[in-house]
Amino acid sequence: MKGGNLEVPGEHALSVAGGMFIPPRRWVYYSLMINWLDGEGGDVAQVEGPFVSACKQIFTLLRDRLGSSATLRTGLDRARRLSRGDRTESAIKLE
Image (cartoon, rainbow, N blue to C red; front, side):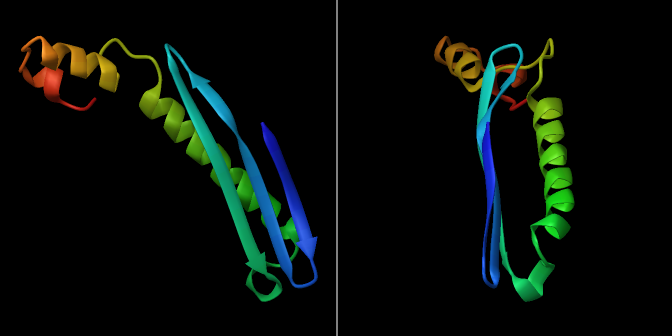
């Protein structure tokens, strides 16, 4: 993971980028950024807390939605089943 902030007179930015492994076999790569002017949110110290909270919420949603499950199928799994002629609802449905 990489992250940082930049402050120049009147302008500010925060960013974080990296990868997150979600078992059983998914990698999610991300880049989260926010930039603002003085009148829109204050300095980095005032924005950092809400930014971190939003990032945690995003990562939690990704983990909960894409995490391991007995019924979880990847796009590749669906493609294989469909190419074999499996047209059942479970093969077609995005889970």
